[in-house]
Length: 93
Image 1: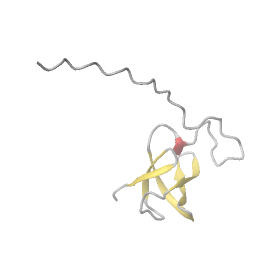
Image 2 (image 1 turned 90 degrees about the vertical axis):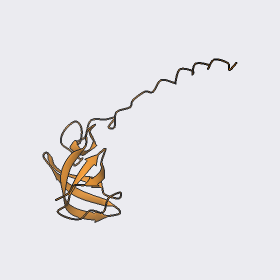
Image 3 (image 1 turned 60 degrees about the vertical axis):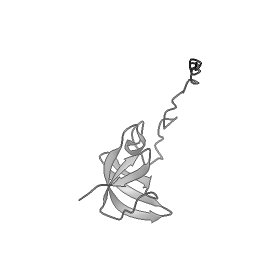
């Protein structure tokens, strides 16, 4: 006879940390409490300038912001999906 399976132990609790831990200061490119491109959702933005080192300036509804484009093959004029300051996909035209 096969022994009954033992229950799995309870997993350790996971504590979610916010992406941005401080309000954005006036000297930052962001003007709201949270940058639109580093919020909890992914947003479509248009690349307006490549900066090098995998970074780009994108146009958002609240103004220009710098994001990483290191993970996607994108160029000026491309619409990218950005989450947490990182472009994660190039949107089809």
